[in-house]
Image (cartoon, rainbow, N blue to C red; front, side, top):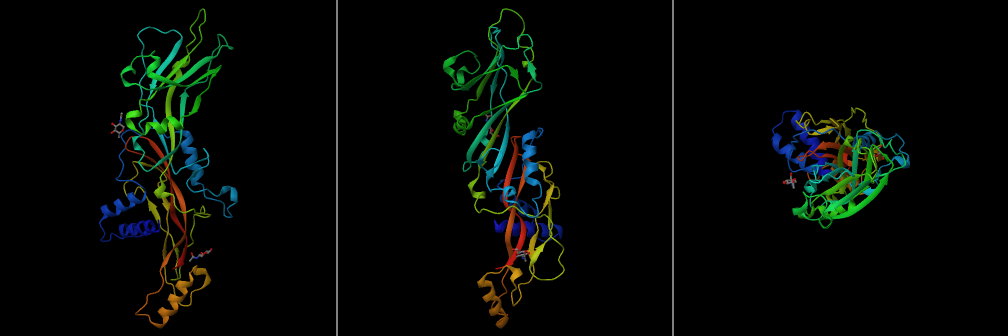
Length: 363
Ligand SMILES: *[C@@H]1O[C@H](CO)[C@@H](O)[C@H](O)[C@H]1NC(C)=O
Ligand SMILES: *[C@@H]1O[C@H](CO)[C@@H](O)[C@H](O)[C@H]1NC(C)=O
């Protein structure tokens, strides 16, 4: 990903200097570096799920100056779920409520859940899927506190019967759980099911049912209508962007440099300047920096040079025309995370290695 840094730095410099390079091909390069084929254009901007927002904030906190081992982020690893991954997507539910013909008094809620996983690229490895079902309030079965209600989740297995409710052979039970309290949210691990769903024809969604056991009298379903939404958290690993393990950066700030010796220079990349503010939720930009400067003879230790670079400066000093100076390049880079909407209106948190130049060297 060293290439990216040059693109980013060179690209933005050219843009800001109004240079001769075609802005559109610069943008294409930038998008490619972010693992995207084209600029995204989400239609409806759903609110960012609180958990994802929290995860983003955790990742964008500046690390402590003397990084304590606990704070160092393992690359391509999602600490919150303890699984490998560099992309976290939240898929909104696109299923409909099922209205059964015969009134089923004991069934308070019956809904099809559908998550379109087609946003996952073929080479991504799905490592975790977690279903979250949310309610707007804590509902409590006041009439009979000790009486639980049942939450059942089925995997739909046959398209033709989806509209009908009760057919047991068109669905396969995934779980059934009793609750006394209706919590504000329930989470279930659906990793195995979601892996199957990556073959689009196999994804017929889920059926969610919430019911109460028979009771002689009364309306026990009230409160279930506080059902808000269901969403699927999916963690995946795009191997092409998870290669080298890197240390998390320990500082955001690179001091201004006056000398002409190889050093990191300040470069702020603003996503709104490139017109991406409508799909990148956060950050609005970041301090990418770049490397620039001379690698003069004799190379000092601060220039983080290789033996080869030292020899090259010696040869250069003897034969300036025939052999160039070593190059001033990034030798330590650190990652950032970006929160954005994709074209299917999913909210995506994606981790990118090697986005910030921390140190330069003569190579
Ligand atoms: C899933 O999303 C893709 C891409 O947006 C779309 O082409 C496809 O029709 C969707 N599938 C369903 C079943 O909605
Ligand atoms: C070389 O690395 C050291 C720490 O290892 C760092 O302090 C220094 O700034 C680096 N040099 C450059 C030119 O970035």
